[in-house]
Image 1 (cartoon, rainbow, N blue to C red):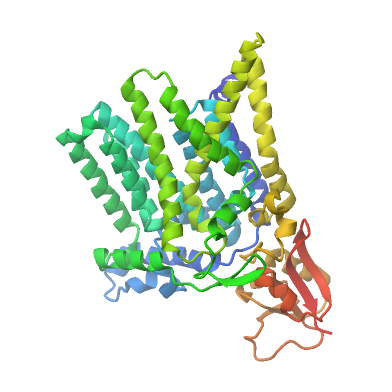
Image 2 (image 1 turned 30 degrees about the vertical axis):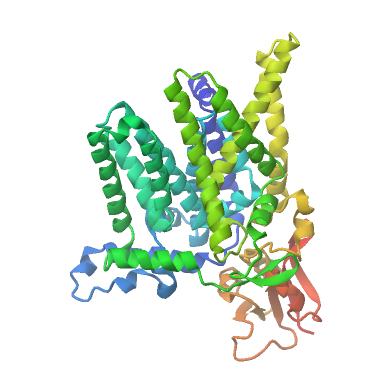
Length: 540
């Protein structure tokens, strides 16, 4: 027992992950099914067809059968995460969990890997206490905590993109020490960039950052053996991408670039609520992304990150490293982290891609934000220590408690948001705009309709005789939660419209629950902190 506690003290990240996983195990069944989930998981279930020798040699093999119930929509989405996660899901289902809950738990567990990678990567520029604070600060963002369960697309890409950069940089460092680096180091880096690319075609950007880091080392630029190792890394990454993405098998180059063109354009015209108006995703004002970045993360994030950019580089340039080469390496690697963020930010402003659902498509640009926030935190703690020394106050224990107290203060908004909004953490807005309660009706909150679960289950308890429930959007999300007395029908898609005594469920996306049968009395509402996510009305 003593050794276990000692290990936790030496590696606090293990304690953080243990606490997070325990919280996840206690709550993963609380979450409703998100808009994007059912058809995407159907894709995951269908993928086994592509890897079945029995089907290969059946004489009628058709790769189209491996794309799931929404083949035309999902075939060009890389399925690497689904391939990796689905067997864990099947294991949980064998233990009695339903499919949606099993996926939610597995999604959350994969997100914990991303938290660990942020901690590991952050130690390049800061000490373990600051890296630990960075990991905790990141994990307690309500937006990210909610998405970690219900989003099988963006958090997995964040995790594998971050892993691709983290392990890629470590591979380059190993090459600098020995041009014949260990195969394990190379394969680990290749695996993460290959999987990241198979999840989303922006994955190669991680490989580009690794390549720039490789070029920053003069000893590697002139070393043919190092170049061969790097080329092998690239070949392995491409092989992993191809192996985990059946859509590319028929025409690897052509289909890859077709996906790249499609995703770069992202032609969706989905409607969304922003500043009280309904915009189309392809016609949003330029301020949309910076506004959502600043208001859906907790209040300290952006100020700390901006401060960290200045203080981080200032500290790296002034620090007493073992050698000029080491100091240069740290500055260059930090500059590449800044390039990671600023390049993608420039892409958003210059290319103006379709955007919706806040910053969820761009979660993978957050590691630089939190690394710079961690650098600011570390600098402020160090300055406090220096002040104590000048005041001739013993700094050791005092600095520890000062750093811990400061960290707790910075973490409080996130923890409070998670507790108050559960299980709708992803609807979080910070106090810069008055919180989620003030954002409601002006900005999107439960845009993925996860409140259907609570709404339909509450209706189950209310009714004692058979009733009909008409659902404004995506009725298939509500149907799995309906009891034996509740028949779910799509509003506008059924053979008949609601009649007296029927119920109508509408969500607050684009304020639908204000305009759907507005004169019918409300019988149920699902809300948090004054934001009404779902409304059930009964037709008089």
